[in-house]
Length: 198
Image 1: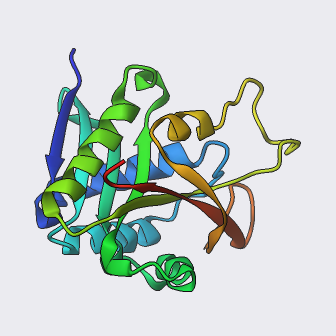
Image 2: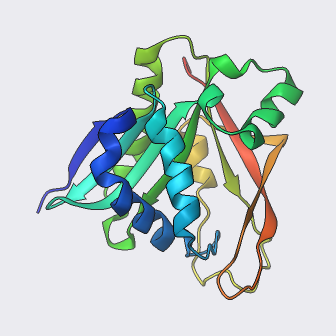
């Protein structure tokens, strides 16, 4: 069956929020995030995007089932943890459109949906107007991390081909519990930026 890609904004995503939470938990349990899913956190996190009328949700549906999703919203509508690195750099928050996650079940990867997720989010920022930069952040793991699966390839090459530049001095820190751990630990996430008109 062909994959249907649907975009929506703000509260229109409400019917999909449960599926989105489950998808995030499933995909982020994989390396490199190793996230032990927390349903309450997922509800709070996704609610911030649903509250923003300028947000975007890009959903990949297979027979109505959400198999992939990607999000974005104006940085001013996101949490303080994401604001600080931009304020320290002197970048106005109002000029940044922030990309949340791109999550896709393994069996649907390699079919161009990753590019579609970026295309749709960048197009949303362009249509809204007033944004100069698109940005996201991602966790990094050491090359020698023993939990790294054989054959694992980070997304750096893909992101660079999309025009995103790895920032050497821009990080935020988020706490989450890794699979098998008793308590959350703090994880640094590095930012990647791209001029919207690139």
